[in-house]
Image (cartoon, rainbow, N blue to C red; front, side, top):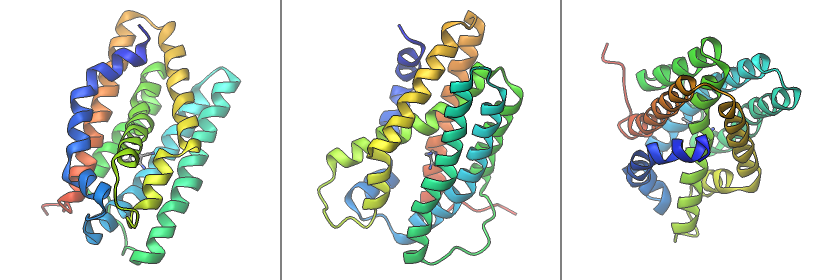
Length: 217
Ligand SMILES: Cc1ncc(CN)c(N)n1
């Protein structure tokens, strides 16, 4: 069995919880309050900058030039394509005031940058994979189950259920499987653990946006 199949099996119960989260259910039917979406987008803008840097770090640590290029393109996609989506919403919702990353956002982005810089390259690739894969699955799920044609969150749904994103996701899975194929058993286990931790942090990111998470002090 491919590493990625086993990895998804391990997080499948968590994924099922993610699609049932109030944030994603309300995004699906268009009823998500605007303040929650704006909070999410502002945090996500910070997240994408840090995610882009983590991807660039991974790109620079890879040996195979096709893989170097792929992660460099992923970084550009996170910073250019996804940021354009944010900017279109900020025109509509108003620009957020100065964005201080929330505790969860900071935890997640620090985790990713740390893994990208200091873990084995196989583990680093596994750590960033949920950021691609879970978003694609959530995007596809919402796209297939939506019934509100006038959903204000249509652009978000179209981005993550779209072809361009799907292509990047397939490539990231393929490269991670390739790296896993020549990794030792203990590295493969570390890869699963990094994949699971990032998946848990994805759940926490949506939850924190729904709660409009604040710093306690
Ligand atoms: C928190 C988070 N995770 C993943 C993605 C998709 N790159 C995103 N935009 N935001």
